[in-house]
Length: 284
Ligand code: NAP
Image 1 (cartoon, rainbow, N blue to C red):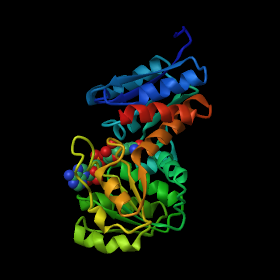
Image 2: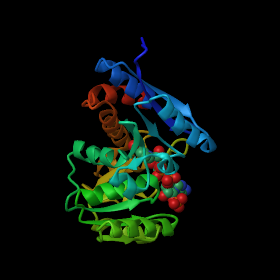
Image 3: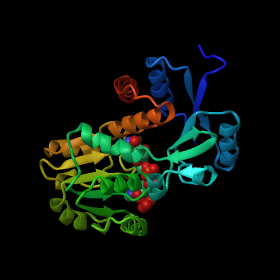
Image 4: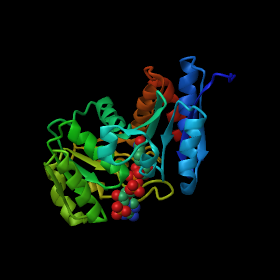
């Protein structure tokens, strides 16, 4: 039952019908007995400024932001958290004392997915496949977690170069760019501890595609795929067969949501409740 004082949180994206976030966050609000509600709004790009004004005018407690608004929304917010500024994308908005503040919880969500799997990135070398928005969050997260070295490979090499420059300007210089060719990546793989797919390759409906032949991986390497639909991609299936430690994108999705929940409510997120809802939705 909602009341006259129900707090509102919204998802701004286009489209949003595929999102699991309303079910996850509403279950979390219920679990903690909070009079809050989370709703999804499909906002066409040209209507984004009006939607942000709507959030202000209606007194929303906050919002999540997804494709295609993660970068463009930054222009309409009052303050951007330094990590979100470095990444160049906001996925969580918090309303505090009349101001709208932009955060990026993908980075923290990714690190918590590693932590849950018992992986400490400090001192490790990683190969990141991709250089889009999610790759930027993963790369800055690993740099902050004192990763020893990063190799970036992206189909459009300029984007990988730009990310490498951004990391360098932020003080992380142990980064290089490798060509997006299997021959070249086959030489990089033996040198790294972790291989992380941040491209959308393997996402439904193209479930059989892989960003890289998992047969090139070494036993005991860490293989992460941030694609969460399907929960275990063809890349991760192949990596599991090779004897790698595999980490699904569902875990990052869960923890980026948990961090956003805490930013809005100031309460520790009921992660197990959120996990059950997310995994039930994703695996059905
Ligand atoms: P994005 O900014 O559009 O970046 C897409 C990336 O995939 C780029 O590096 C792009 O390369 C690459 N790519 C796409 N199709 C390709 C192809 N056919 N061959 C080679 N490279 C290709 O998207 P994003 O926001 O970073 O999201 C990427 C994926 O991460 C999506 O599947 C998304 O659902 C997932 N994601 C998961 C989480 C989570 O919590 N688990 C969070 C955020 C995103 P180019 O630069 O050459 O185009």
